[in-house]
Image 1 (cartoon, rainbow, N blue to C red):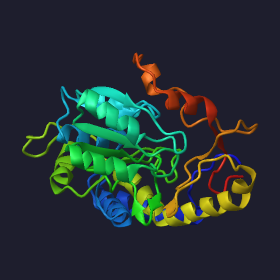
Image 2 (cartoon, rainbow, N blue to C red):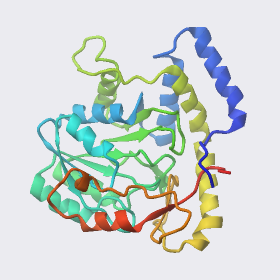
Image 3 (cartoon, rainbow, N blue to C red):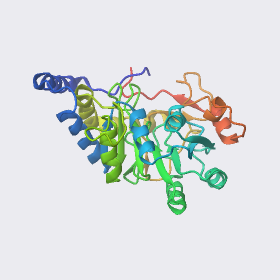
Image 4 (cartoon, rainbow, N blue to C red):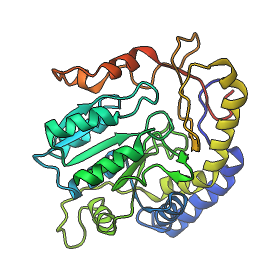
Length: 322
């Protein structure tokens, strides 16, 4: 399969109608379609939603709202460097947690130990490859018991659910990415989801310089109307895309790759990646092959993270890829 953006040709007409409306309105930012995209995403995920120009802008809004400056935040080492870099840019100190070998996501056992050592104020959990972290319930419970803020990196998790519950709803906030390779994409863009009304209002001001009282010292992380219009079209296709990927995986891939990530009962993956634990000839590479604790020269060992980096591969699973 070759890479193909999950966008249907028959939606082109509708998208151009949206873009024509934007051009006629002469309101290319802070208009109807950003609000529509937020409303659609909020309804889909059963949360409030705030659109941003990038995952990074949404992540920074959450981290600054929870005031991590000078404090420690824990995150898995098996993630993209965007996650720890967001902590550093928000003025926090980052330490890393090991992952599980079965789901590639944060290990609650190692998390308990790291909480005792580092006394974090925030924990980033990362949903890897399109599925929800298998131990998200235990992680959320632990954070609640310890009074720790839980943030979910949902950059891979479009359309993922567990017994109907969507990624980003276990923590205090979830952050999605709409980068060009994602299950649904707007080219660039991000979305913050939360049930915290105060964070919702903070995020809206943070993305727009703190206008108009400037009590919030934000910058420009606004999503433009043309990008938001793509998002409106894409949200309506998300269930269809996820259903197609799941059917393809079950019919064509699962019988050939028994040594793969196997999901708990009730979990639906968005299949951003199809992850196996055997070398394959036509792999699309790995989710991550460089653990963040290695990149940042941390002087401790995370054995499962190192094992995962060396022992997983991704089978092509692109939506209707040729």
